[in-house]
Image (cartoon, one colour):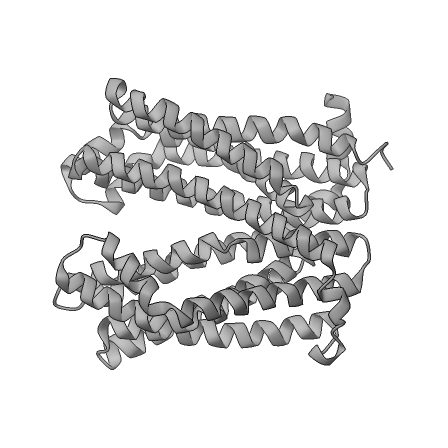
Length: 447
């Protein structure tokens, strides 16, 4: 095994390709929390704290919406990467058009039924009247950008699948950079408060969607008059598309269950525990931003190899991407071990929260070693569009999480809750790795 790995390591091309595809995604990922921080900062300088809560609540609603329809990005990446590997240009175009059609349909439904959807959403929240009022204003503006936001997911999916990460980076920087500039103009310049933040986001999404459509059409070298309707409506391909998208959505819902339960139990333990866990979750999110770059690279390269039925290329991609993911994960371990307390101190000045977060920091120190496997193999499975295994893995990990976290919190307190999260990562990683061996074997002998 060591000799085999050494052979793969000597092939610099695959290492270079993985790293070339990874760094633009990491930069794009890091621009997301920056834009969110600016959203908070601009309203944070207004006289009332309700503006911060309203923007946070409104942003959470749309983040949840777009996370649930994440299959528009992930499914598109997988299908495009496989068609790219099989050199099927027509199917690449058809996949993109189908994704745009679904995005238009879902976004249109959200706009058409915005009133009853909004009433139901805000019925569940128990914020103050002022916060809910401003958050609803935010919702009523942001909802008009839903089609544009979903178009952007489809365009990113196409570009990832075609291994054009730098172009995808440009789109993300345009989106987040424009959002930051318009935030400053509308909120601090015009005094539009929460409405200014929402308007800035919608305009940024619209401009990015138009730019993305233009870029993708240029990349594909076609116009919409050349669309083959029979190919678009091919029964078997539509059925496969539906299956993949539903499986990804179920997977996402299971992950939502884990984190919603996590926050619910955190809140039950008191405000200090909730605040400490929220800070530690930010450290987990930073870890995800770092490792997702390799997952996205694996989506494109593994999907390409899977579509070409090239077992050797698939195996090389997984081994090399996993190697570099582990290197980055170990760097996170070192950073959190040496500087975790300092990072926590930068995020909060409240002594009680700092002390409690420091107490549970050990979970963030071991998290990178446990997260690297499911994060990387999620990318591999998305590229191969093997979403049944992904769905089953996350479902099983959710069951295990609840089985550990519920009694574990009673016995171990907050340590029991974090134990459940970590074991869920282990279950996901172990099952995905186990099933991957069988999937790789199905491609036949090495090329």
